[in-house]
Amino acid sequence: MKAWVLHDINDLRWEERNLPAPGEGWVRVRVIAAGVCGSDLPRIFQTGAHRMPLVPGHEFAGEVDLVGAGVEGLARGQRVSVFPLIPCRKCGPCRMGHVEMCRDYDYVGSRRDGAFAEFVTIPAWNLLKLPDNVSDEAGAMMEPLSVAVHAMRTGTGSGSQELPKEATVAVCGLGPIGFALILFLMQRGYRNLYLIGNKDFQKNRAVSLGIPEERFFDSRQGDAASWLYEMTGGTDLFFECTGRNEALSIGVEGAGPAGRIVLVGNPHGNMALDRQIYWKILRNQLSLSGIWNSFYNGTPEDDWHYAMGLLQSGQIKPESLITHRYALSELDRALSVMQDSGQDHCKVMLI
Ligand SMILES: [Zn+2]
Ligand SMILES: [Zn+2]
Image (cartoon, rainbow, N blue to C red):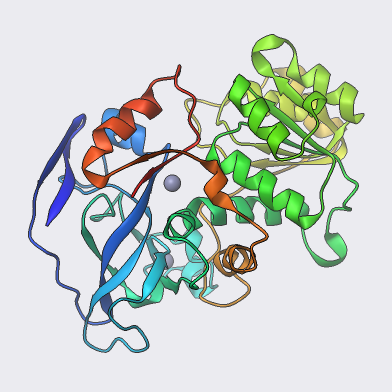
């Protein structure tokens, strides 16, 4: 088979590899669609992966090609989406059913070979069947969509603790996860949304989703924290999706009393807060929560089934977030689009 293999930092090659064979309980999947994630850029060009050589790619959908021994209920040709984390099943979080916090996990596309290849092997437990009316592209977006669901549920809470629908909610950082969050928040009934981005096309995209133009602030054009506080009178819920100091500060300064802040973005460097910003966390009794990956336990309660249910009923249409499509063999072109800050892009898909 053909695969993109990362041999070293900034050494990614399109080459011939042996077809992987699925072991007991595992399945070989033929990759049909694979999303390129923002986290693939530093992995390929700056830091390298945990193990190399490695085939990157962790957001994908495909069809079952070959099932290993002991696998039931999955036939060749079954379309599937894939939860990319393979838990150890022994550590504390795994025993609690929260494998997203597993202490010793394996991960398709960062720790073991992933989806930028024609075929990949994965445990049957990690597969979700794709309903007929859910596209391959939507299936390939299940991972980032589920991360957005995880962030939303963490921020809005549930049951009697659920944030009222009239609450003011801000999303800072409008990449694929930020926009996916907006889709899920709107579907959930939150209408007082405030967006902070830094590109004109993000504003156009927000307007096309029905967000009033004046609810979008371009952080290149002034003090986003003052804007946010003036617009909302103090935000009830703020999603930080950039991993930058400035954005975290905007969240704290823009927050109202007892405001909630959800930290979603991977940090670009050390995160530090000015003293007067830190004071506001104390004085406003803010809650800061981190999220990591998404909640998956194979039951209807998990984030993946939540997202899949909304795809199946047509209430979330994530294909609108795709701005670029390339063939698998054109991954190099896809990466150069994402590296070029002058190029407007949201989700970049190999299909
Ligand atoms: Zn990702
Ligand atoms: Zn574990």
